[in-house]
Image (cartoon, rainbow over all chains, first blue to last red; front, side, top):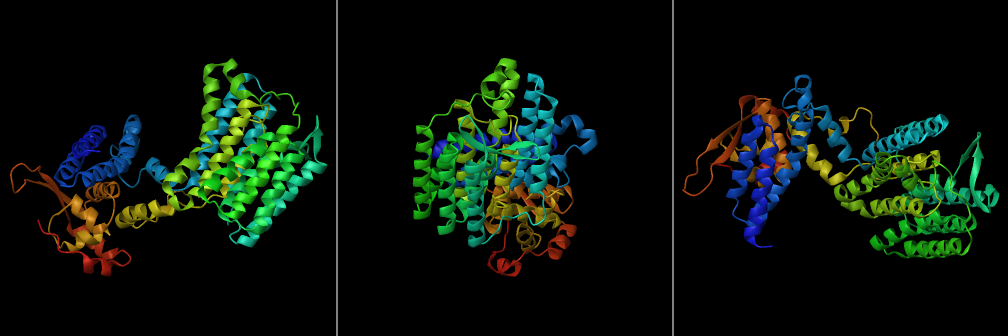
Length: 392
Length: 91
């Protein structure tokens, strides 16, 4: 990139920021523009402008959104430390789990809108709403971190794999597929509950025991058989193998590919269940907006991984596994008669999503430190206090 | 760190790019902080005309009396070490 282009981009970013800032802060926009222009190195100038843009533009946008309520929140609310919106923004963007909780709430809500518009039984709506509350409660539990030790995590993965094998061998069978267990009058799909959290946990704590557990889960998916979940396992482990090509990961990936191949070799004749399967298509038959709500809601599930990827580079392998797992579930629902996670009817995916969020790292460390400096210098309030209802 | 650098400037005016380098923060972190400090009366800001022609004017900052008290009351971790390596900022 030429020096002139870098300089031009820097000036463009400064001008855009200045235009977006409220009138009372226009001088700050001009200050950044002049300061950028005074930096002799073109690359440094561009970085300075882009960093300033990144730091202030969200507040400028928040100011525009809050303008109708300026009399209530104050004209410069997004730029002082007391803005609720900015506190929430700061707190969630630094915490992939909290971001995920917000995305889950939005996705379930969009799913409820679709189901209500499509005429789903009220019981379905209530069950999804209750599953969301349960999932959020799990995320908000005190001592809400996953077991930290490698041995404990490995044992937990093996235990969950055992539950999946038990489901395959002893679970409720429909048309040759044994994927469910009956619990308190409800039909639960353990693989949707457990596989995502197993993948995220394995991404952070790989070892012999955990690898045995992941391999057993692949075998369970082959026995059930469940192409969608076997595909989720392959996708999650493949993403992990790209990031961490260790023997444990490669071994588990090899077994999962074999398991997936086995599910492809077996017939899958299950019909689509209304409000559960195939709703990426049926929702558009209801209305274009309900279709958009379903697709948008499903895409929201990936946001925590994207946020984590950019905010927490040290844990990218974990976010890649999370992203690949849920993307595989979404794609499977798009191409076959498999549950549409979160936005479709079914509590297993909602709770499973919450569990997978629980396994994510608690905080995007590096940016938090920088932000902590910013807030801490001014009022010494640690950023952890920003969310009174702490989710992560 | 930003407060520590401003405090170490000892009443002299500082510029944004200098603060970014000396406090080792990004400009996206610095400016929201400066805006808040100014709004709360801890910081003074003024435009300064360039000493040489062809250069843009610059926005300069220094702590007010209350800002100095705030900075002294809230030393960052390793403030002493940082202050040792921060050169005097003079405009």
